[in-house]
Length: 505
Image (tube, rainbow, N blue to C red; front, side, top):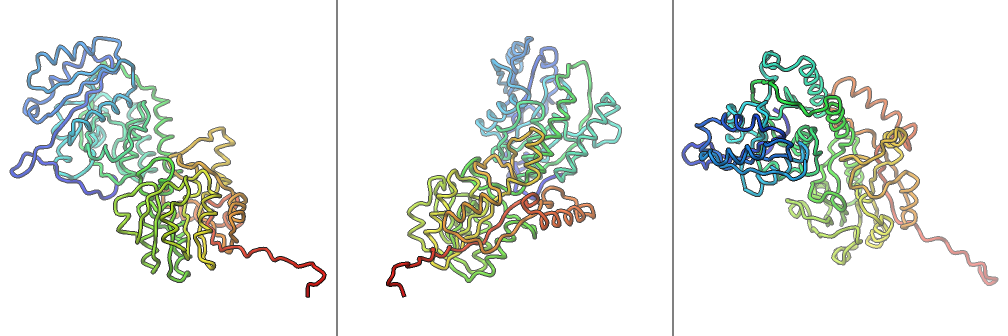
């Protein structure tokens, strides 16, 4: 079982007073003309009446898979079949995306992934959907590894067996999960869970299955495993093993290295809540400590997301007005006033009507706007004469970014220093120049180290040693080792004018 707590309604299991869930089956098929009919035949007779829809998605096969599906549709009166042929090959992941879109459009409750080559046993479908029906989880993975020795007895080649175990171990370590297998293609999802994750952004290749697990874990969804038999027959394997291993390892490593909480929603992916960074050395912890030493006053939170940080500020006595491009659930409850606006277009007039402010907070937001200097100037105009600005930005000169560029793999990550939503990058020198030009004087600078609490779930001695070394490195050379830069600023005094006239006293 994996993932954090999640509220999942019981979908119903046929008992009195419960509504039967709408169950769909997605059969992904490519060159499966010789096996497709047998796979459909093996769907249990006593389960068929519970199926709302069976989508057979032929991914531009080079054989007669589509015709076999159409022929089966004519004779299988007890199966609600929909046969679809993609004119172009979408890939294994792309075929799933198309099927899950159909499941969402059909307003299904559960969708089961089944392969058209017969590698996974349709006879176990009731076991696969049962935990979802009972409301125990958001996804179910069929595992060939739960029963000791079953995978090898079922014909799994030795090299695949060890490869599966090694990759699963790496993935569990980096994601903080305890799954017995990541690489089974027999699984079922709550359609509601699919709606809540951006699966459309995933790869069209075979690593789609790993990426969707990452998304489920990242969004706090619950995953349950059930044992399934292993079968290896004469089906053709289209997976390049070395490339697959590289891709899934890259996916989980990038996720773990980049994860530093959710990004602000002013630019990039809209609608994801920015998580509160709870660890003692995080930018949020430093911001809250600064707020504790400020007299209670009026605070403007730029890029407030769902208001989790603002809620803490209110608990310290501040009256908080938050601004963000979308209104997330619960934001208005955590703020004194929420104003919906795109900060790329500057501060809206409603903000001025709420001011002036004693504090302006720009936590992890400047890197998401195209004109941060303009936003800082507008923030300056919103402050009282003795008002302060608190800013946090990622350090683009961090060794991780430098190493990526040196190795020729400079590109965006899901989160962290190279978050896909970042449109501006800052070094210590460049952010301090922006602050000065906007009329601010830096009165205190703080630096965060690596977010070890999200880079690893292991809280043992190794993490403590790495944490100590990182803190020492940050103290010695923050421009290279600081992960984030946190600034406490006040308005600069106007330049002193010297009267050089002959009559000057």
